[in-house]
Amino acid sequence: MTRTKVAGVAGLASLALVLTACGGSSGGGDSTAASSGGGSSASAGGASGTVTMWARDNEKGFINLLADAYNKSHKAQVKVTVVPAANFVQKFGTASASGSGPDIASIDLVYLPYFASKGVLEDITDVQNSLPYKDSLSPAHRKLATYQGKTYALPFTAEASVTFWNKDLFKKAGLDPEKPPTNYAEMLADAKAIRALGGDTYGFTMAGQCGGCNVFEFAPHVWASGGDILSEDGKTAKLDSPEVTDALTFYHDMAAAGVMPPAAKTDNGTAQAAAFQSGKVGMVNLGAFFVQTLNADKKVDFGATPIVGKTGGTASFAGGDEIAVTKGAKNKAAAAEFVKWATDEEAQTILAKNAIVPVRTDLTDKIYAPLDPRYKVLGDAMSKGRTPYSVVENAIINDNNGPWAKLLNTAVFGNDVKGAQATAQKAAQQIIDQGN
Image (cartoon, rainbow, N blue to C red):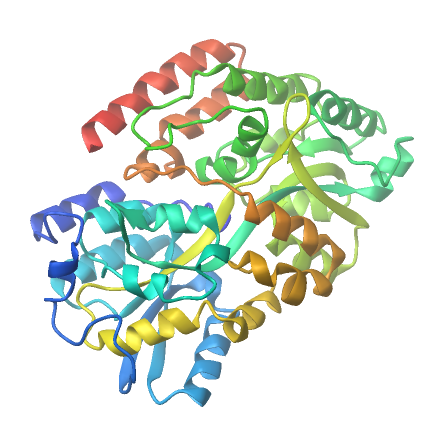
């Protein structure tokens, strides 16, 4: 999720019905089925003709630049359609089921297990295996693109989560502006010191009513402390684990100490960035996109540091998009050629210049870190980033009425952390059991 935001994607429940009702496939999309969908094999070369691609509107700043660069140097041509992010998953699912979808889709990586399980994506395992830099591709993206041992997409864009801190506020509060916090206790103490400046100045803020935001911004605290929110295979919820208790208690303590602005409790992801940009908030957890934003408005002297664990350690969410050839693609050879090209140095350089973290760890120091010293922190964070694997990710995490979002809000801003955990654990496990 670019910070994946996070963007609440409503309607996955109905999407599931559409795909099931239309018999998208019995699941998995094995190699036999993949080669029978019409058109040439997805791994064939010498591509020509035109292919269609769908991308979300949060990619509109760079997606056509990428298509133009490809079209200038290749016989095959790609035509891009930008789809509103809030409607993308529903629209893509419906179109795939009816055979009217694109040849290529740029998909939020958290939805890859779901779409792969429904058989609407082409098996491109051989395309991935042909890449000489395969082992440098984002591990989190590769994991999410794998279903039943086959690869259904390649990493395309990446995003990482870090803590931004306001150096001016640190200095005014008597803190070392070059020394960000390294554990929960230091982060709480720094936030209290900044809040002590008084007025409408606060130490930390969060999006208290946004599930997608908080898997990106809050879950790294849990991972950095040695815990998890789901099992590796996505079949067991771990929302009642001790590491989740510690992280929720940490945020609860910050809220109870008054270091968060009142708007944090109801923020659905639209207020926290602006609050930090105003220069009135000391710290916030956000992604690489925010470096470009802060550099553009030049109002805050800021640093970026990894998100910390309870007693040390660091972690990041690995977000972004995967790029896939669809099962119904009319020109699979050209689609596969573009998907492969999207991971090479030329394409990834275009993305890096537009504030997108490269999906290749071997390119971070070459094409990304030189653009801004803070990008080095983000590139390193992404290379070790994690993403929960689940075919019901939306229902558990991104849905703002789901168990994860409710857990964060009630535990942080209420008075019963463990009670909130017990409720969320039961609800999440029920969703998992029904979806597997």
